[in-house]
Length: 488
Image (cartoon, rainbow, N blue to C red):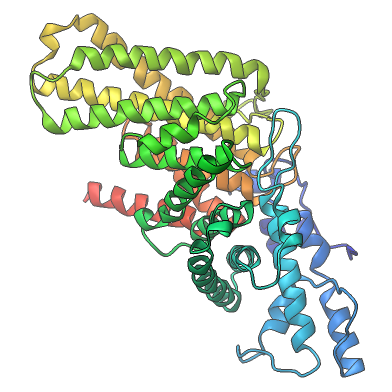
């Protein structure tokens, strides 16, 4: 691939036609005029953007399809070749197959770049096995169709292409039809290929979602059932077991549901010597306590077991603190203070996207634990149950929980520059994808500061815009509408 000297400057400096210093996380030119720097294009876009005209000229000269070669197609060609000036599909006889194949190839390559993480050291990787599974699959089997749905959705959202979004939706519907056929076949139901494909359908919902949160979790719940069948047969979990366990615990925490027996069973197959698996087990313990507290608050009875719940809270908090101390050694990261003396902003540096994702799941879980404690204390005050417990202890708990929520929220926000590729690691959409749940937790927490709340919304909007993850944009908008409703 050839880079024809495309500028790496931020979009603001390009519009102003001035030289950008390309500082990370944002350029000083934007800072001087009081604007938030929009960031920089990644290497994929810079490399591919200028090769379009060459391919189009070559095709026009030959007046026939070019077969047997893999052409390199740029994003601007996808824009120009996919539709004519009038906005209708391009029906040129010598461009059809080649352009379609190139869009197909580049959508998949872009998805691999954006959403796969190679295994390294403590990091087991994320979807790193996907290219190999895809290479072994037949054209119309479930995995390639599901992959194309997610890949087209990723490309459509990142480059604002409605025609490619339609392709994504078409492949998604086809994948659902193929999935129904596959799930009726006992041999294929529990294969790695089937479960990875269903995981990709869940990812499609996150990238291109137009539906409610409840419906968006259906694919994860289906994966839980398939994994349980798989474990009955093989007595060991597939490579995506940890990812699915985290997803189902997030769902339970979001909706304040207790873990089901199948969830406990799946987590029991994880290797608890690994910090990420320990974190997943902690999420399960917290989700159980959160569900119990939620029911007690809803019941509002004076004879509820408040003291037992407070004792259980202390045990859970110690487990989370122990994990924190251990992970600071095994999953260490560096706290980097801003070089600008006028600000106290911190930008933490991690070993990779997977590591920062694990840390932020832990932080979001701890925020939810302390949020429910504060809600429980408020409930106890309303039904006059504080008199039976040492008031000083309760006041101390309340102050400490507020402080911990502020600390965990600050740590999540300090991870944003790394997660969005503004530091030493090249950007990947998966970094933004890993941020979404923790940011959502912040904006739903009434005990985060208004400044932290607003910053989390701003980052979600940026994740939606920069990473092409539509659910991030929807969460940010719904939070803004809720804020306006409260003010009104």
